[in-house]
Amino acid sequence: MFAEFLLWQREEALKHIRAGGFENLHLSCYREVNLGGDNVWDVWQPESPSMVSYFRGLPHVPTGLNIRETA
Image (cartoon, rainbow, N blue to C red; front, side):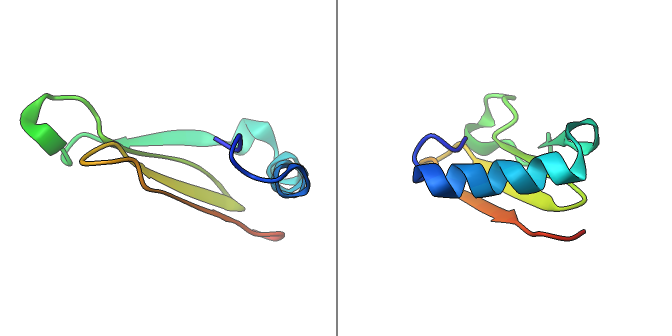
């Protein structure tokens, strides 16, 4: 998910994710958003107390990422 970010940005993001604990990182999938009618979960987001990421698979792949220092 962080491959396109600069190295310092990846390191900063992972620092905050680790601080919140990987055990608190969950993946939420939204079945009711069935883009394209193919029954594939097109909208999902990894989230934790200090991070939310949004992914939508159709019609293209926009992704938003918000990581904060404190929960």
